[in-house]
Amino acid sequence: MAKRVIYIHGFNSSEKSYKAVRFGEHMAQFDVDYQVPRLTHEPLHAMLQLEQLITADTVLLGSSLGGFYATYLSQRYGLPAVVINPAVRPFELLDNLLGPNYNPYQNVHYELDKRHMDALRSLYLAQIKTPSLLYLLQQTGDEVLPYQEAVKYYSQCKQRVEFGGDHSFIGFEQTFASIVDFLKIT
Image 1 (tube, one colour):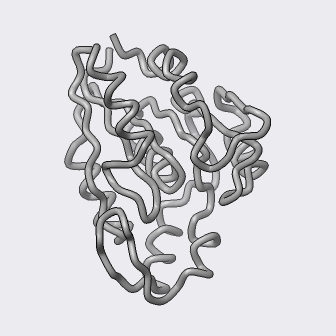
Image 2: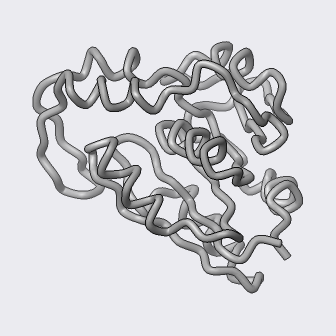
């Protein structure tokens, strides 16, 4: 039974993302510790931030780059996780954003460089060892990430693939019951 739910936001996002806030409102009816840490742009530092929050009864919910992080943590610590339009190989996707960047949701300017890509590459799992711990929520209209890559990568996992939508996952609230059920939140 889950007692701590950690929502992991995506790249250039924050703890105030729409999905994090909406799911947090839904979590208010449950006896759980709902956490949405503000993650740094540094992948290994972000991972340390997340690892410090993990307890034996933690479950994860991650969107985009947060889905990538949730996948890694799920497999490393044996935690159930729901991934929403996840990045599968972010070190390839973010490569074209090397250089100066700005996160408007955190009001932070930073430099994205090769060492960030190397850090992300070090967290990549070529194969999911325990697919029963993961639940993919994917919309085919994702304009940011190639949905086919996620559907293939998570092929052995529980999946809910919806036609259309976009990277924000339109109608996210309609997935709450299945998320709660999968993560065993009571």
